[in-house]
Image 1: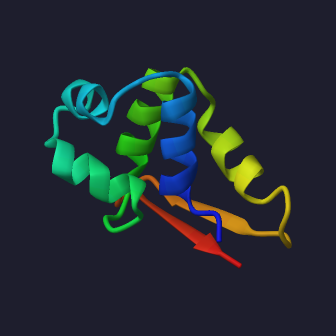
Image 2: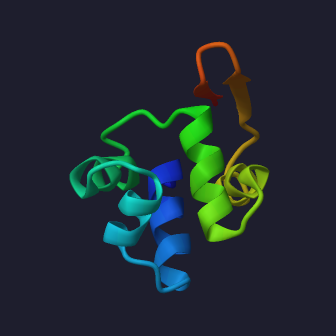
Length: 88
């Protein structure tokens, strides 16, 4: 199953960026960043935007790529709580 963290990991690896550098640029520990890529930690909207900025991609493109081989999915971004919910 494709998830956001897995997609982020693939994009990061394709750009030759280490987890350590991502964690440093995001001002978080490498272990916490690793949890994001493993989908073991929730990803806030702000974190998603910061990650996308580092990877030079549009945040919407992650969701488009996640859904390219599956049925239609709705993504809800709650700006007040900085949370992302995927509804299948």
